[in-house]
Image (cartoon, rainbow, N blue to C red; front, side):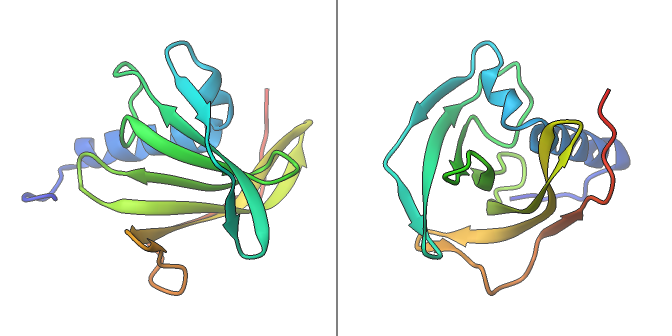
Amino acid sequence: MLTTKWNELQELYFTGYAFWNYFTAPFLLAQPGVAVEEIEPHKEDGETWRPLSVIFPPEIPTHSAHQTFYFNDKGLLQRHDYATDVAGGVASHYCFDHVTFDDIVVPTFRRVVPRRTDGPVIHGPTAVLIVISDVSLS
């Protein structure tokens, strides 16, 4: 839990690595040193997702070393669970409205919600909302 207010550089660092992680997944999972293991299927909202338990090495800046990524039967990222080491937040990051840009599928609507031990707080407050309207890949 944060005990002091962040300065602009701390906010920029957090936002920078967070967005880099969000926008490069699942490609980020193929980086050297990243340990990935498929775990038991997960059922949510009438669908069955294939979760990956991921351990990031210390040299990759990220929210926490251990995270879980959930993919649907088309291989699209649906949910991403993590705890933020620096702020102590426990969250589920949902991905919706996947659109293809230059042959790469990108979730264009993302919603981060708090997560408790019994699961995500779907009908609660939104911690982060990301809407992407245009993507240029080069």
